[in-house]
Image 1 (cartoon, helix red, strand yellow):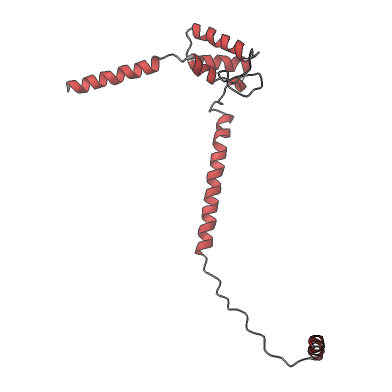
Image 2: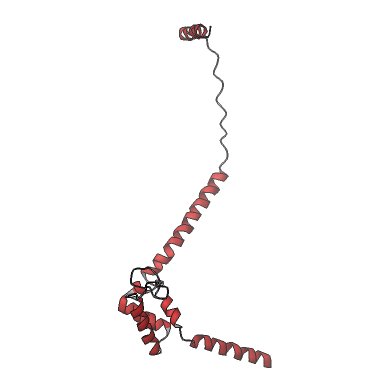
Length: 155
């Protein structure tokens, strides 16, 4: 029983430490997109003296100095610059539809293909007999002319 208490105490303190850990500067930088047009995160922007990344880094430092956590810093930047500054769109509202729709359409397509394959494989093969050989017929005048010309051509 005593070891169970120690284990419970260890779990509670570890969760408290993880929950109370402030976001690192790099975490916040990677959550924001640089606005210089490079398409990279603020952390990854490779432009020397970037006119966007450097001021954003200063703003991140200022927000962290105020003791804000990652979510409140990101909401500050989202309110100031719009949602386009976030490197990953939020999963609410229209963005949720944009996240879910491609996967839903792929699943729907897979279901349609599966149903079609099942129906096609369950269909019995055609039981139609091959067409009968044509009945022999008496040679017509045209057939006689063709045969004569073929003999002249070959001979």
